[in-house]
Length: 131
Image (spheres, rainbow, N blue to C red):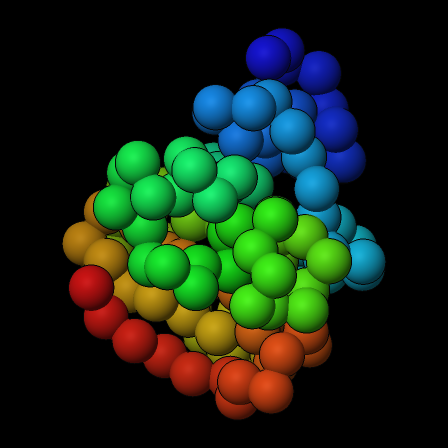
C-alpha cells in the first residue's frame, strides 16, 4: 500500500483492505465521504474501510458488516463504511453532529467513530449505536 491519495483527503492505504489491498467502494460512497470531510474541514484519519469477507471474519467484524466489499447479503456493490480515529471529545461531538445531519449512521466507540451510508444502499434506516 502507499500514501498517494486515492480520493481527495484519503490515501489508498487508509481505504484499502489490509489483507487484499483492494478498494471496492459502493457507487457514490467516495463522493459522500469527500463531501463530509470537506464540510467537517478537519482531518479524518480512516482506521478501517474496505474489508474482504475473510479479513472481516479474521478480525471479528460483524458478519453483515458494511465495511465488507464482497458480501452477497448486502446489495451495496462495495464498502459503504469507514472508521475514523478520534482523539478528543470535542472533535468527536462535532463529527457526530455533522454526520447525523448529513444522513450517516454512526457507531460510537471510545477511540473511533464508525460511519456508514446504510440507508443509501440497504433497507436499513439511519441509526446511532455504541460499542
